[in-house]
Amino acid sequence: MRSTPAGLAAVVLFAMGVRQAGAEDLAARQISIDATVTVGALRPLNGVQAEDAQGAAFYRAAHVDLVRIPDGVGAGDIDAIFPDMSADVENPKSYNFAPTDRLVGSIRSGGAEPLFRIGRSAGAGGEPPADLDKWAQIVRHVVLHYNGAWDKGFRYGIRYWEIWNAPDAKQFWNGSAADYYRLYEKTARAIQAADPAALVGGPALSKPLIAGDYREKFIDFVRLNHLPLDFFSWHFYAVDSNDPYVFVTIARQLRTILDAHGFGSAKNVLDEWNADPADEDTRNAAQAAFAASSLIYMLGGPVDAQTYRRAAAAVRLSSSGTVDAVGSALGAFGSLKSTPLLIRSTGGDDSGFAVLAGRSKDNRLVQILISNYEVASKYLGPRNNWDTTLPERRALQYFNNGGYDATVTLPAPGKYQVKRYRISDSNNFALLDQRIETGPSIRLQGALPPPGIEFIVIGAK
Image 1 (cartoon, rainbow, N blue to C red):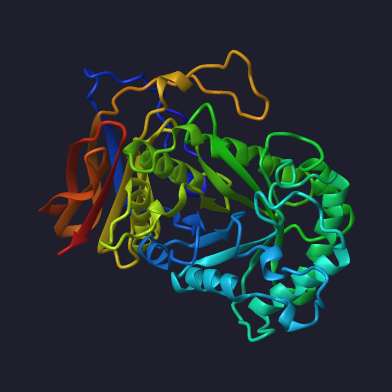
Image 2 (image 1 turned 135 degrees about the horizontal axis):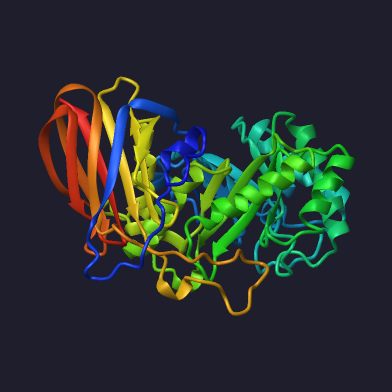
C-alpha cells in the first residue's frame, strides 16, 4: 500500500495495483470509513463552464461554486460588450452590457461565483487588439460595471478576471508571445485600477506541458515587471488516455514551476477540462465516473479551482428536473457540502476507484461518494509515438473492483437511516434502497461494477 499524502490528500488512499476486470472479477474492494477521525475540510471545488443564461437552476441544484464565462461567441466577449472599437470608451452608450448582465446574473442567482474571461471568442479571430491602451480602458470599464456599479451596473465583487484564452493556440491568438505579454501587462493594470481587490490571472494555457514562451517565460515577464499573477490557469482534455488522475499529475508539475519562479501564492486553476472529446457521451456512466473520480483526486492534489467543460446544455436541469449522468455526478459531488468535514477513508486508489467521505458539523450526517471508473484497455500502456503535449500513459491493472465491502464507524451509537443512490448505465442517481442500521459500526456491501457511482447518505434518527 502506498503511503497517504498529508492533509486533504488523506481522503484518497492508493491501492497496490489493479487488473483489467473480466466477468469473473467481481470481488469487492475493502473500504473503511471512520467518521470519528477528520482529515480536513471540504474546500469549494465544484465548478463548470457557463453555456448561456439558463443555467441557474442547475448551479443551485448541484451546489456549483465557480462558473467560468468561456470562449463561446456572445455574452462575456469584449467585442460583444464594446461592438464598435471606434466609439468613445467613456460614453456608456458605447457599451452593450445586457447579454452579459443576464449571463453573470444567472451565475450569481444560482449561488455560484463567476470567473470572467477577458477576451475574444473562438472563431472571432486571433488578432491582438489594435489599440492596447484603448482595449485596457474598455476592460477597466467592464470591471467597473460589475464591481463598481458604473453605467447602472453592480457591486458583485467578482474576484477572478482571466486575461484572454489560450494564447498558445493559433485559433485564439496569432500574435507573438511578446504581444501577449504586452496585452497582459496593460489589461492587468487596468483591472487593478478598477478594483484593487480583484484576482488577475491567465494565460489559460491549452498545452500546459509545453515549456517556454507561455509558461516559464510568461511567468518571468510577470515577475520582472511586478505584475499580478493571482492565479495561473490552464486547460486539459485527457486525449488518448482518459486517465482521471492525469489532472493531478499536470497540476503538480505546474505547482513546482510556479513555486520555483516566486509565485508560491498563485492559485493553480484548471478552468477547462474533460475526457477525450472523441469519446464524449455525457449520457453514459463512464463519462460520469470519469468526472467524479477526477474531482475526488483533485481534492487531494494541488488544484485550487476547476471548471468542467462539456457538451452544451445537457448538464442543465430539464423541465422535469432531471439531468444526464454527468450532471448527476456533479450534483452528487456538490451534495458533499452538507458534510464538509472530510473523514478518514481507505480502500480507494489513484487508478479510477475513488472514495471520498464527509461528516456534518453536528455529527448527525455522514455521506460517502464512491466512483468506480476503469481506463479502457486501448489507453493502457505506452504510446508508440509519445506526443510531448500529453503526459505518458500509465500501465494500469485492475482487481477487486466489482463492488465494495465497507465498514463505517459512525460518530455515536444509535439508529441511522442509510440511503444508497446509484449512477450507472441503467440508473441515473436512482435511490437503490433505504434501511435503518444501528451504530456506531455498520457494514455496507454492494455490487458496483465499473463504470458506476454510489452516493451513500447516513443520517442519525
